[in-house]
Image (cartoon, rainbow, N blue to C red; front, side, top):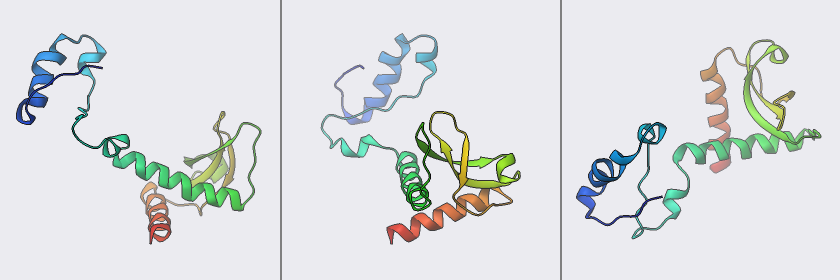
Length: 128
């Protein structure tokens, strides 16, 4: 973690040209997010992708709970394409530690896009 002060116009330029140029290896290749101390931090806690992922897990978790799916290592959710789903896309409950297929949580889909549309529609219904 590095802290520095500069005006808003040169903030990223200063980081890239002064601070980041001293990084080596994988640190030099990494992407960084600058967090401003003068702004509320709630907006920085989760990216839009993380929010969507959490909402997917909430929706799928409710379905798994309704089906009373239990597993000794805990239950997670995932979009799978495997033998258990007859080589079609399906949202499924999986073992948290093992990723073992436990049960289907959605219909089976021919395409990845159809599966994404299905979960998005469920998320939209839950937030409405």
